[in-house]
Image (cartoon, rainbow, N blue to C red; front, side, top):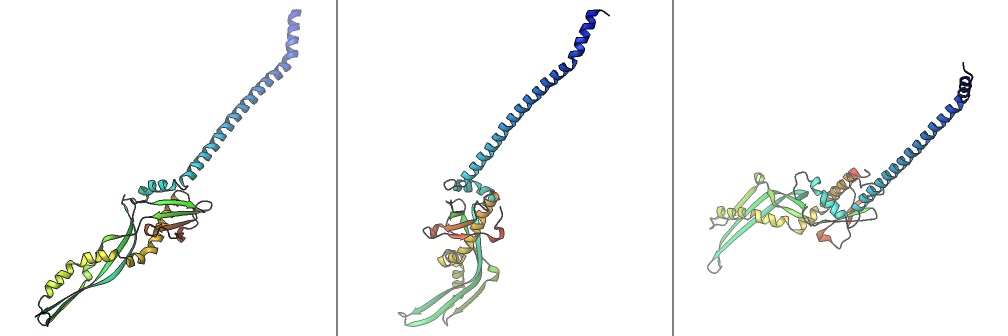
Length: 261
């Protein structure tokens, strides 16, 4: 073997391990650089994710602040009324109503009485009450409460008259022969008179608190769907109807679902 070839083989043999170490060092450096870049990109992604969550939380909170919560609620109403109706039925009760009519007749300058015809109808009636969803609603917030300014309570007209349980009674004086006519006239007045009774203040006061509870349940169910019911969110609903504006709103929570969320 030539002398110079032997010399180069000895040199290569001597440099073999230093070269391996150098190559491994370069590879390690490249790996560290790649890891740093990956970590940097991951940090940016994590920061972006945190910012996105924060922005989303801020947006959600904004939708449930005074000034925006009404819009949020109104836009959700179609989802809470599957049939797309405009009435929110709140209360109903049945009462037996008695309607009567007396026709008294006299002749000769009211000096000679001919007697009176008396007609009476007793009939069970179901009165129902509702709010209109297409009338103005306003929601405000404060101190953990969602205050609902709801429309006025309205009767659902006409009332349901249970004619199958209707009772009639007629009496007539000694010279009166118009019982059938008087009863027919009373029957014709039945629906208009019951419509009027459905709207009177006594009937509405009878159902007011039941209506208030139903509205509170309605709004609380919406808040639950929106994940806005519970600690650090809304914990009670206060309801005031249009004819109560200026009064202190009544606070209600729906006990059956209290604490959810």
